[in-house]
Length: 306
Image 1 (cartoon, rainbow, N blue to C red):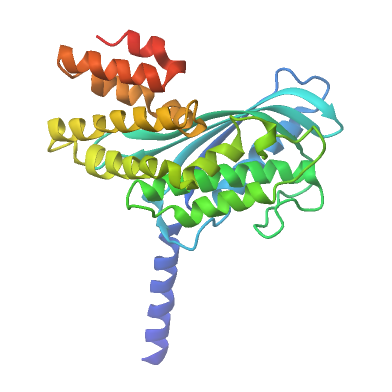
Image 2 (image 1 turned 90 degrees about the horizontal axis):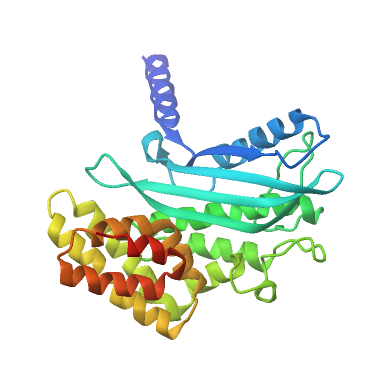
């Protein structure tokens, strides 16, 4: 009898364990058209190793079901070979979350990072340690540090879309990556305030800065109280989401050319354009004017709202 109970317990434990998954469900693509004279197997290995690094690593202590994994896409476009095994290019990060009781997802990240250089050796495993972000090889570590940074941003935004301030620990991990990022002269950039005002440093700095606390309140409200209730309260939910715009106008006035607002609208401009298009003429004009003030890169998109 005892043997039977033990067997049953083991089986149940295995079933329970197998039901859990890692946090991410990422797809990875490496574009290499500009790189000549290198065996294509290097880039096949690059895709595979990055995919495994993102999807197989446990990024939090929380348990995720398979259907709870966060969908994301990573597109790396290599534009130059700087040295043996050292590449320069851009990385496009996209992530989305499902909308409750709907057949569509909502974008939470859609960002192109143009300051990306790293070393990759197909025979060296990708390693990352929160306590030793820079590792022993700064250029090799810059690949995993950049990936980990954006993973923490994605997870933090996803968590915070379900509960107020739920992403705080993850945002602090992203900040830890920034504070301990690898350095290598002028080759590695994007981690410091002095590198420019539109980089990784400023995204997480502004997310955690009390001056931008309204952003995080709006983020939660628009997802949990707005989009997730759209199925049964469409008018009320749309109005609630659009109430964010005057707050963003004020935030932009106090913090002109904010990297965080640019980061936000890179993911959300289509959604806002669609919501505004459903308003009456007077409200539509008012909202379009607000969007044009706070999201200059997408002015043409808002001009085309009918």
